[in-house]
Image (cartoon, rainbow, N blue to C red; front, side, top):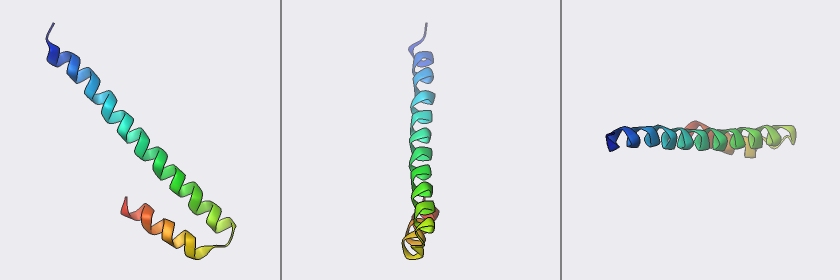
Length: 55
């Protein structure tokens, strides 16, 4: 069997892991932003919102 086939199997998993990590990071930012809104800390919310938009 060709090794390139084996490598193709691993690369999508690595890419999926990176995408999952990015989604988890985005979700953490969103949760933090929601907490700031609940605390009526709109300045902190706007800072987090800007970070979310940049990603």
